Image 1 (cartoon, rainbow, N blue to C red):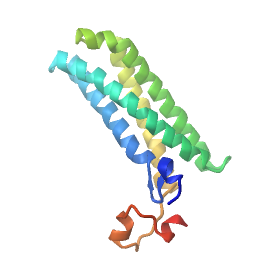
Image 2 (cartoon, rainbow, N blue to C red; image 1 turned 180 degrees about the vertical axis):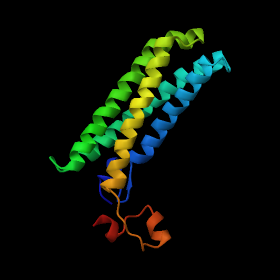
Image 3 (tube, one colour; image 1 turned 90 degrees about the vertical axis):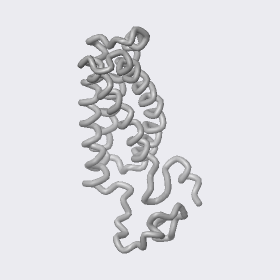
Image 4 (spheres, one colour; image 1 turned 30 degrees about the horizontal axis):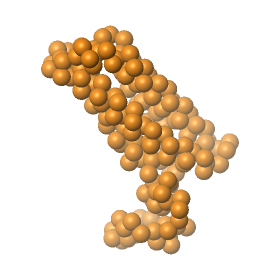
Length: 170
């Protein structure tokens, strides 16, 4: 076992992608809650749920960003993958700023259980930017194949094991 597995994940099982699922899921819930609140569906409960979801997403972002940054450091500079990953990182940072602003300016909305137009718009814009960043993150994995092993004949039991095999380490 290598020490780097603690912050990068196992070969073929990097830590960053599952953490993005948590963060994007929480931001998605925040988007749905803020829309439901503005639409008058469970208006007060949805307003509170929106803000709490933003806080959860921002907290999970810390680990997501950290593991993504560790992966970014391993990419060869000047390559198309590096340019795409750098753009992905900047776009995701921009989305995080929009969400942070929504949560900051929206705290009073949480207290009053009524979302005002500013935090509502910041949440919508943040989510739109998040989708662009997610698209770029998909390119990193599915176009460039970063951290993808492509061991198509690997038996299922070996593919799913948390114990690295020599093929995965190479």
